[in-house]
Length: 256
Image (cartoon, rainbow, N blue to C red; front, side, top):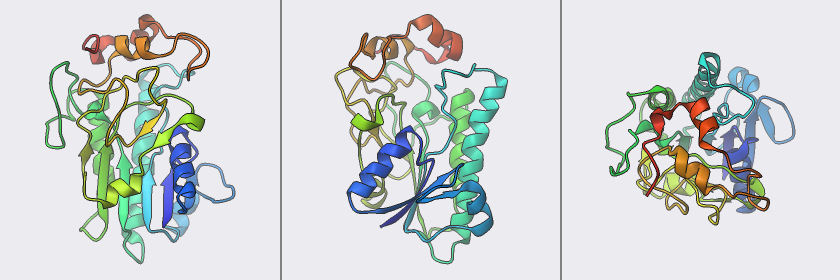
């Protein structure tokens, strides 16, 4: 299978690319910089979709970028980096001479209201109560294609941190073809990850780690990270910096 991956040089994209190649698929990346096996976003805009059977978009500014302050300017960048790349890929797919087999967008569980008790599925309400939930709504709308000639899949994944060299991935295109989840909000997805679990889980059809329906939990997220060398992070963050960056609004309390 020939797969086009937007954002394929990022954390999740690198792991997905490695997995796809290991399984014998041919991968072309869409990146800001040219290189072997890549096209740039400008080339995609001017020349259209390269020959491929499926497309995946993982592009977007890292919302956990430690070098950026969470302010209005950065929020605009987080939003535009997702919407513009998604719109560009969607336009290229809609104009392709042959329909793709699958078009997969990975968004986030931030669509749902944080809760310690609620369980969410694809039909649960959300997407309209804060910056992140509205971001997901706009992001998914930008990906929609006219008609049904291409299978369109949305995976609402959680936040993951770790080393791509130690990551493991659920085949994204397998998920898009086996009929298990379209508009895929994983019921058991949360933002917390236990230290002994795999440092990166992509497309959480089944998630290991502190996974639950509550969304971002600052206390449990910080407590779950390894306190010393040997894990994906050298230092366990304290709660104050997290609340300083994100604000306490998305922290409903400790995960059970």
